[in-house]
Image: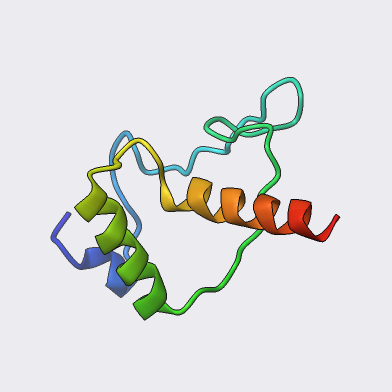
Length: 81
């Protein structure tokens, strides 16, 4: 298959021509999904990049930005209680 043949709508040939249907795990989750429920949150790109720069500058590679956001939100909730 040439690089952009899929744009012409030509059918694929060969072993991987068919699409595989994802089979859910016994508990209903798909492979690679955790049991944790997540939600999409929109943050300005400039803000996110500035946070990543600070995290890298501190050398704190163990903590992800997602964990940092969760920690900040939990701290905020505790303050309000």
